Image (cartoon, rainbow, N blue to C red; front, top):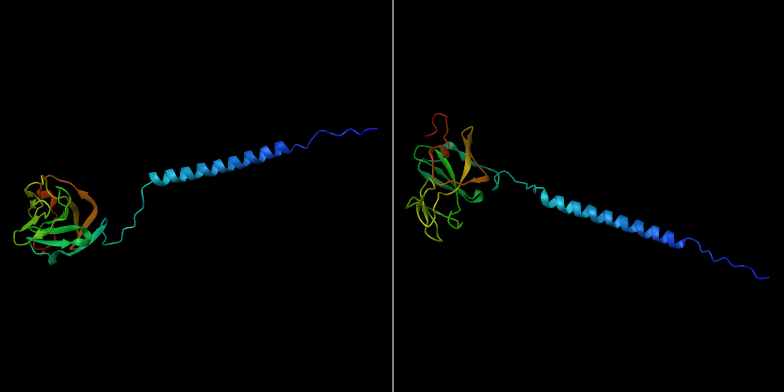
Length: 177
């Protein structure tokens, strides 16, 4: 008598398929998670740690009394000049020429900011007095607390010309204003 052999095989194929499907689902979930992380990291603003006194934050310029009227003081780390105007007002002007962005020095003899690249010139207020620059130097916000001058370099303010309300004044007696 001949024994009949069973031709049925255990369901290895379906177990293998189930395992591979699970692996693909896990890999797909990981890929989607990484893509979501990548997209959100590009979309959310980068947190920049700004230390006191660094460009992009508030810079302590010094006591009001340490700045003489009609003078300009350079703050290279802050990328600005602090102008103390004739009437005692303060104005923080950018060191960047509005023509092509060159760094401009203050020329004490001429009492002008003169661009070394294309010879644009600006007065103590930052007004363009010689072309090719067509507008005034950008400014930063100045504020005075407890007779100390601070400059907020977090945001540059574009302008076409100097206006009296752009200058900041100390209100304390004896502040040379």
